[in-house]
Image 1 (cartoon, rainbow, N blue to C red):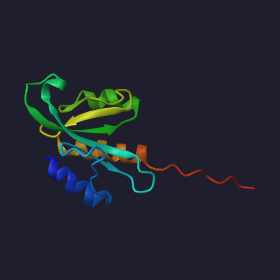
Image 2: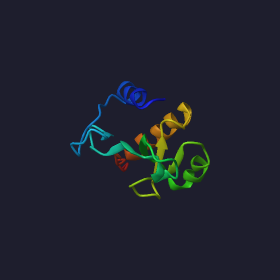
Image 3: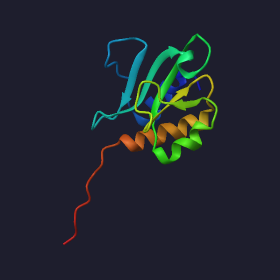
Image 4: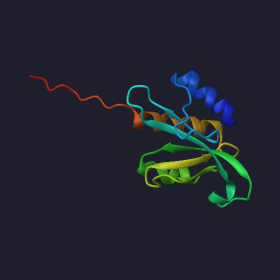
Amino acid sequence: MTRSEFDRYISEEYGVELDYPFQEDDIYVFRHKDNRKWFALVMQISADKLGGERKNIWVTNLKCEPIFKTGFLSQKGVYPAYHMNKEHWLTIRFDEVDDETLKTLLSISFDLTAKKYKKKKSA
């Protein structure tokens, strides 16, 4: 999935548009409408930041439960988070990861950052 396909998928699947909190063209986020929390950060970085060659690539950072991270980190295109908390976030290279892994991680990130509603105690 390309970056533009990813953007379109989020817009169609989750009903949110990209947001530029830093006023830069090469960094943007997708956030929940109700709590404004980010569930995806998209940015352009040099691949050498992830141990690759020295060229610019597009990546996304997605939140993940620490217990699941090891399994995902063994997959191609999934890395410890760049420029975010490495315990709770992963960095995904659009040009390396398969679509199903990306969609799964996106869904996890969306759910983890969603507003939590307290259950009413029954009488």
